[in-house]
Image (cartoon, rainbow over all chains, first blue to last red; front, side, top):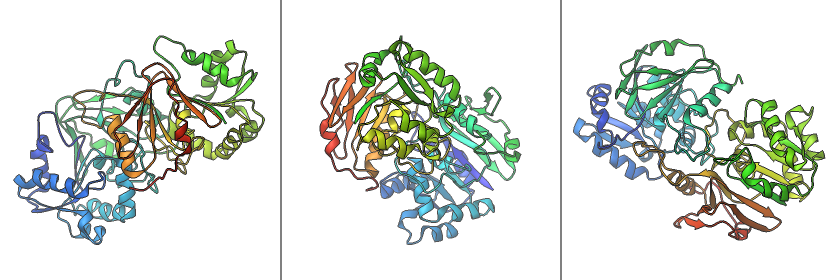
Length: 242
Length: 242
């Protein structure tokens, strides 16, 4: 299985996807075409054009899944797949409606299709939607996602409270609430970082700030860029054990 | 129908619920007992004790719904109900599981039971969960909520992006995504504000900053404290029209 799961698609001072160009090139490994899944945003054509422009320097031709008469068939023929960010509830609803959850999972899990995700596309690689930051603007038929890793990821991980006068929960408090209900580790990926899976090896990459590992009953653990997180692929985790 | 829907339960420099004491007293209107619905947090007993302490100066005795053998029966006997904040997905799941959605809705809609909500409890008064800020830590059987007002509310409304280096969406951007999929107005309630419904009259209260009204195809409209929003109760709104 080959995955590249980006916290975010755009880093400050960089063009779209530019901060991760080398990693993306390594994932694609010479593939000349890529299927883009644009459903997290409303403007599928505009979003696909943006991705095509960003990946053109890598010599990759980009096709939007929305242009296929049967998107699941397009997945079966793809050389690589990229699930882009936006609203993860809207994205997961569309994946379910188009039969893309089994179609993508089957080929990626078989090691037959490299998977690139950013933000909401990174959420999709987890067992469920439960650690997204997004607003539930539509109701997906289920929270079950692609299950390409057995733990949860929180992209765009943010340390501080948004504003000192703001009385809502911090990100860490939200993830502690997740752990009250689920005995499943969560990797909080700070902006500019990513997870790379190659078979049974999982590593954290990107900027030095790295991420944080949240586990039930333990204090959050700092993860530095380059950390080997392969142990997380071998755990036995349980949802809904609040 | 008598509702008091608070953006937040605690204001900076004030004790829990203190900033809204006069409004709460007006809503309760001499009621001597209140049923508290604590399911948004994990510690039901501790949360209920906190509410009992906060409301003691008003001469109100507080009972937690979790102590009732049948919470829906407790609703049928209550003088007033308060649905507290926390995680709105956990809260809505519990409301559905305990049969509290029809039980609360029936008596409140009949004008028979005053309803106090804060944060997640304010989200519950809307037709759906779709404009919550919370993380979907558990999966409720449906997003349908109490439907005590026909529009949506976004509590803890925040103007700024959390952090200039943060690449996630701003609150306004999230609500615009909601409007892409739903033709339903959203009142963003800034911290320290609330909505008060008395029959067919709806007003915005609390600190001067007030709130913002988001409607499909229109620029967000500033709402000042004291504004009469009764027109929002009479609209014909449609979900899932993306």
